[in-house]
Length: 250
Image (cartoon, rainbow, N blue to C red; front, side, top):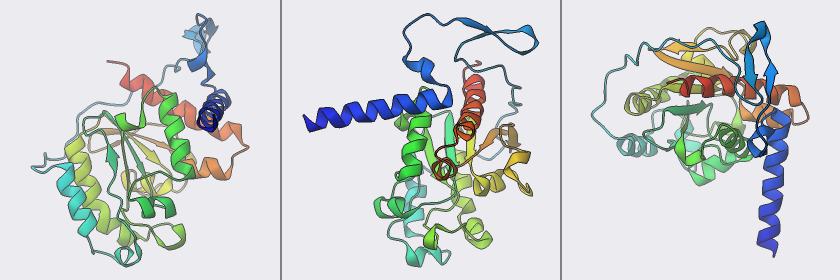
C-alpha cells in the first residue's frame, strides 16, 4: 500500500511541476485549442513557439576511434588534477550513446560523488522532470559534466580543473555527435561560449560550438535554490521548447 502511495505522490509532484512550467498540456486529454501568437501566427496550446533555428553546419571535431566505455575507464583512473584526491567516485556521465540530445552541467555534487552517476541529487531529480516534460526518458538522452570529480564543498571548478577535464568532454562529444547540447549553468556555458560575463547575455539563444548548436540555460540547482520562483522555471521551459522545436523540425 505504501509503495502505491509513494507512486501516486511522485506522479502528483510531477504533474504539479509540469503545470508550474506551463507544460501541463502533457496530461490533458482534450483536443488542443489554437491560441493567437505574435505576428498573427497560430500556435497549438502547449506546443513550442517558433524559434530561430540554429545553423546546422555539422560537428567539425574529428571522429574518435574509441568508445564511451574507453573514455569512462580513463576518467575513473584519472589523476590529472587535485580533485581526484578528494573524490569517492569519478562521474564520467551516462545515457544513450546514440541520443541526439546531450545535457552538460558543471560537476558532481555529494550524491553524484557517492554513486558515480551524474545528476542524481535534488538538482538531478529536477533535471529528470525537465527531460520528461520534453517527452524523453532520462535513459534516452546523454548527461555529463564539465569536470568529472566533485569539487570540495561543491564550489565552482577552478580553471585548471576544467582544463584538465576538457579533453574528456570533447572526446565524449566527438563520439556521441549529438544534434544539440544543452549547457546547464555558467560553468558549462563558459566551456562552450567563452568570455560570457553573465548568463542573461546568452540564456535562451542558440550558440554554436564547432558547428554544433548549444542552448545555454540555468542549472537545475539554480531552480532548486529559487524553488518558489515560477518565472525562472518557465524561462528554462521556454529554452527547452526551442530545443524541442529544433529536434522535431526534421
